[in-house]
Length: 329
Ligand code: DAH
Image 1 (cartoon, protein in one colour):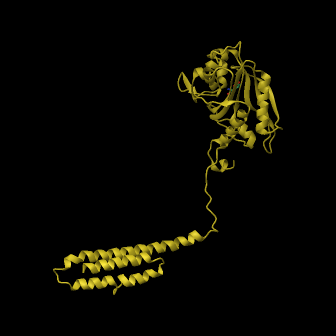
Image 2 (cartoon, rainbow, N blue to C red):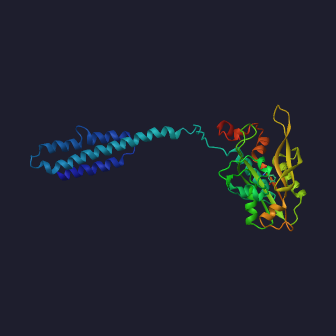
């Protein structure tokens, strides 16, 4: 009896192995698993055995029956899955699904572009901390204690000594402490001001600081560099003007305005940066000899520049994270 069982098992395995299309499965089922199939015949024979013999073969027959049924089901499922997939696989005309991936934020794009232009002008790129000490944000930049110039920038103080930097100028100090001239670098980053939020100002914005220190740096070079920047960034036709100004850390100081003409509104001058020749006191604060070295510096507002370039009218849209706005760029 046990040989018979093994024989049927062997034959079944061979037969099922040969099946390559679903219509042959039915034949297999009839041969082995139907009422009159080989396995049923075995079971019938088993039932005829004397009771004493039964335990020897019961398990083997049962196993054969179950395994055959299982293999058959698996094969059937496999053929079914093939025919399901076949339809999907073959419809090559289906358009692919559009994947929604993010875009680079418009401010990051603007910053990237600015960095590229300044790299082309020979500037390297440095960064500094957003949490600053009073020393770097004010004192080293020649803002004396109680000097009214401190009121120009509404500061978020953390405590007596620390604050959120109000401009990127402290990075100038950090850089000059570390490097010896010649130094030619830009320093982009976030700055914070405790101002009333409106279409024109926000509590957080970005600046790009610039610094060039060497033995014979002139205001004419500063002017030339900034004009080259605005022309590369906005195009040769950009209308600009320099105005005299005041900053504690530069002398003389100036501001650069560009002409802004929003659609359907009156045009006006818009200030985009402050600049000047580094005050000798600032150089002395970082142990650079002001008798030997001269420097120029500038600090520009990234949002304002992006507003002008992309014709956006409200600075808050940069920070709302509204996909409908961001996706346009
Ligand atoms: N730090 C100034 C501000 O935030 C901008 C500035 C003006 C930076 C003149 C400079 C500079 O480096 O020379 O308003």
